[in-house]
Amino acid sequence: MQYNWNIIGHKDSLEMLEQGIKSGKLAHAYLFVGPARIGKFKVARLFANILQCPNNFCEKCPVCLQSQANAYLDTTVVNTLYIEGQNEDLVEISHRTNIDQSHRMEKPTAKTDQITVKDMEVVLARLSKTATSNYKICCIKNIERMTKGAANAILKALEEPSGNTVFIFTANDLTQILPTIISRMRIINFHNLSEEELEVELIKKGFYTANDKEKLHSAIFLGQGRPGEILRLLRNEEVWEKYKRLFGQIEKFFDEPFLTHKFKIAEELSKNKEEASLFLEFMLYLLRDKMKKSQSVAAQKELKDLIKKTVESQHLVSINVNARLLLEDLALASLPK
Ligand SMILES: [Zn+2]
Image 1 (cartoon, rainbow, N blue to C red):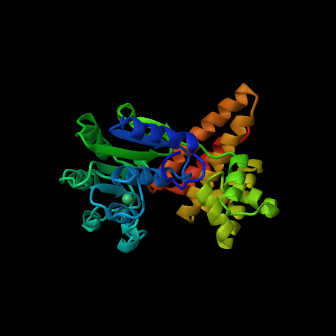
Image 2 (image 1 turned 135 degrees about the vertical axis):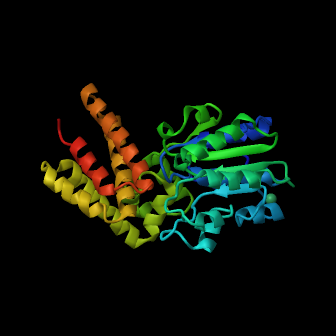
Image 3 (image 1 turned 90 degrees about the horizontal axis):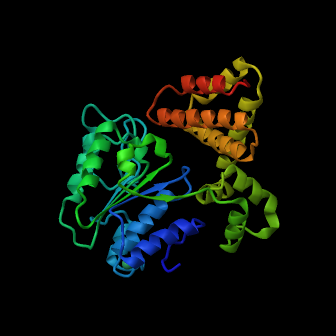
């Protein structure tokens, strides 16, 4: 590969993006799809930086330095948003999101990370300003977060693409997104990396030595094949312990024959939204793994239904629907038929 991606894995996806740059055939809109936290948004930002820098992301010129500080005017980035009581540190937020957040602090204050019509208005106003570079780029993370109104606003922008605007969006699951939006974007798929691929890459890049393979294997499993997550686990004992505990709870959640015991786990988990979301993520990972290994058609159908339900619950938890009820519902659905 020609460009300075500095990313573990995702070779096929990166090559597709490079082909677009080299052939001069960029899409007006990209949608990076794949499991959460495998580096989609990191690639989105890098892709934007490569397009903006006159030297393909040299990391030295003023454009690169501003891009890396998330302060380049022609690149609009929407990642974490201001949420009352949950995410209020504006300096911290500015490293991730560079649109003005003041409208989210006016009454009524934003209480979820949903992307609203008002957020989209701020994004589109920023994009309409005169560009100094070749492109106006807009990266938005997890577009499942868009309200209906926001999705319609973006649809309008996609229907009337202006010459030099490039949208780069990410999504964990296509089922939550309007088909009319999907049809207007170039879809790039991202996958969990295989265990072998990760082992080779992590050792090659010097993140881990071949001597302690047992810990490396556990980290790859608990990190669900996500490079960033695996590194976080290897560096942080507290995270390591938390993940081990949550995985234990999932095993119990599946194996436990009594509904009351499953409900008990649901109750415990729902006390902490972050843990409930992580639990659902792990659950999805295990269900997809079971699905891959399953031979029976009936079992596959059951797993498919359960996966669909889990994805829906993930979305609902993210917009603050009562996690306990959702987990209890999953407990019911996961009972042996
Ligand atoms: Zn540069």
